[in-house]
Length: 593
Ligand SMILES: *[C@@H]1O[C@H](CO)[C@@H](O)[C@H](O)[C@H]1NC(C)=O
Ligand SMILES: *[C@@H]1O[C@H](CO)[C@@H](O)[C@H](O)[C@H]1NC(C)=O
Image (cartoon, rainbow, N blue to C red):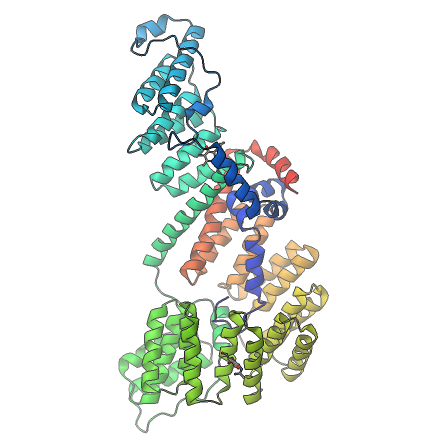
């Protein structure tokens, strides 16, 4: 959870991420497809079985088997059925006429012998000669044998430099003859990866992993490795062409809610056009009309602002929007610029701190708070935001102290109370936490947030009915307000109903309703994607993951969403290409429970 949300944890996103990451490996390597074949939630169970310990074991097993002689550790030699004595002299190549007059069983026998010779040349790393023998085997053999093509592919793979196109061509032939040929799938996957054709490589590694019943740890690792390359590549392409834009309303309003409302700055006696535009920008912000506010503040700065306080305000606002649009360094420049003009500008200090946090520099972040305190020791915002940073870094005791200090300075800001309660919860002071929440509910009867976050803690304690009641009340309060509505409680209610009663239909209705109100509500999309997987609806899950990618704010979020999208797509393709596997997958998934 980033420092940009008013309430850090245990928030919806945190739990959703757990929900996903617990199953991450299983979803990625294809066990989800197995579960889908059963039509249930089996991959939960399966994921817990392939913990890091198992992976380690898998690797060890692999290493002990590894051959040192060739780059392709599972060379053709492993595919040889029964090595036979060679009778065909190496340089005696059969002509087409000679082959034509041979009976079929003789031809098969000669072909097999050619292959055996090829295998031993492969072992001696004489790849070109081995290729020649496999080619003869293919010519002599009365019917095409997948192993000849696959073995020749292994030779191409091991040449320096490898002939990757030929590997793909031969594996295509082998797989046309036997689409369950796992070795050829792995081999083609490796070649395609070398050719940077990641989507196709992923298709092959996914199929190989599932066909091998998830027993080949190194194939599973190949899936993850290729997914990572594929998603990073696609993410970079998307980001290079994407216009910077604001995140969802839910996200922005949560961000701005973390700051106390301040009065508008006082205009100079004869305001310039830019000065007036700035006031309009701040008014749009107050009205939660963020799109207009961005346009107006940019215009104001362009038109020119005539007084210092106004310029600092404008730079603060523009910097904030840049931050929200993911332009962290641009944000930093604007915010520092505003501090230069008005060194006591608390809001700018606090926001610079979150920029440093986003860049992973905690020390600098804390220095900003110290600096802000020097100018305004009694500004409650400073302590609240320092509490946030401490919370994120798991310093709950100090965080609680800072929230308390903030409420002592101003007890009208609802989030300091909520965060105090959540910090107490994290410290294990459940009774205190609940008491703080109940006090907050009484003190802010018209605010939805205490209801929502209290509901989250109740949900965490598996007090489902109480949690749902709180979410319902939060939704009711939100609906009573003038729009736009914050839909987080609606999504939370859906998740609660799912966890409580496994009521997928109800959970989906909540998320769909949330999306109707705020089409860009990321948690709603993420939840729908997971719920779709639960219902064996991979196609819709893919659609939702794609939507999640569209909404992603940072490169990391984008890569994450794309990873799930491509993993699911590859598994769907597998189920389409191997319909006969569904039956076996069902048994496999059942066995995993
Ligand atoms: C396991 O997967 C790796 C990597 O994809 C592959 O090279 C290897 O041949 C596979 N092992 C077996 C026994 O199929
Ligand atoms: C707030 O956090 C800081 C650590 O950054 C700590 O030194 C301080 O004691 C805490 N409490 C108050 C009331 O500021």
